[in-house]
Structure formats: structure tokens, C-alpha cells
Amino acid sequence: MKKLRAMPKQRREEPRQFKPGQAVPASGIYSVEHRPHRLMHMATLGVNMRFPRCKQCGDAVRFTLVRLVKDGRGVPFRSTAILETYPDAQDKLHKAS
Figure 1 (cartoon, rainbow, N blue to C red):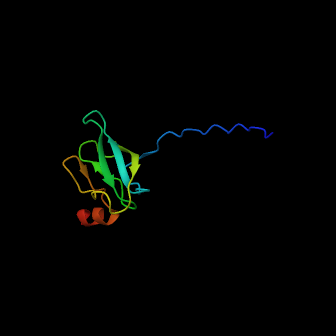
Figure 2 (figure 1 turned 180 degrees about the horizontal axis):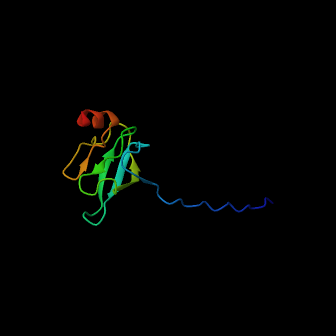
Figure 3 (figure 1 turned 30 degrees about the vertical axis):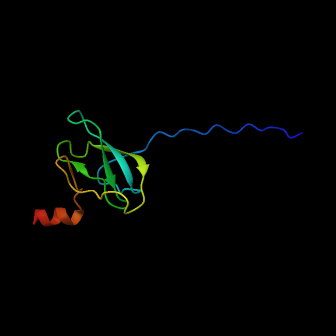
């Protein structure tokens, strides 16, 4: 008769939050949480782009992956009334000139 072995309990990791300017690790649908000025909403972001910033709360916005999507299957992110593309270092240099 075989002995039954207990499986080790798997830890449930806290969902990882991302900040504006960080590289998006995987294409997916992300929940977007702002400071008190706006309710949570969703955004589809593609791998290797940067997490956008909020036009009102700036870098105080946070992103959490809700669901992965295959590249090209989601609607690509575009700046909206509330979120804007994170500026690249080259963009900042051109604006300063």
C-alpha cells in the first residue's frame, strides 16, 4: 500500500503592482488605480511598452495585471482623457530645447 504524501501549501502571492515608467512585463489587461480623484478602471497594455502616467495624479497611479492576452489580441493602448504615454528621455530633451 502506497503512503500518501501531503503536498506543500502553495503561497498565494500578493498581486504585483507596477508604477508609471516601468516596462510592461507581459501583454495583458491591467487594473488602473488612481488616487481619490477617479475610480479603478482597466487598460490593455503591450509587452515592452512603459506603464503610462495619469494626467491628474501623475506617477501616483498603480497597475496590477488582471489577465494575460496574446500580443496583437488586445486593443493597443493610446493616450486617453485620463492616461498619457510615459515620456521617454529623448522626448524630455526635445521639449527642454
